[in-house]
Length: 80
Image 1 (cartoon, one colour):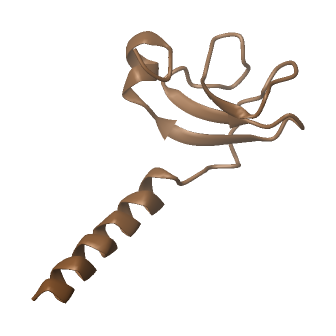
Image 2: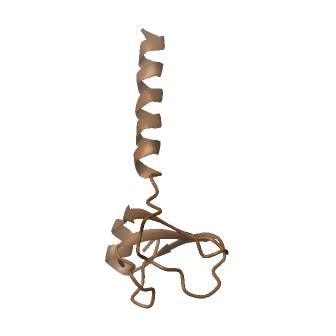
């Protein structure tokens, strides 16, 4: 019984991590200027970015869209 319970919990955790870490590299958002590696809410100053989405910019200018985030929509920051 314990093994089945642990297996189910691990499967759910793995599934959740896959869903929440999905990255869309086909976004139209552009990182403007040099950015340190990190995650940012889209802003009006960044072309093609949705202000309610989280993006990750690399120093080379590559960008990844992680999708909608409540805090970006509410206050424009990763946490309010």
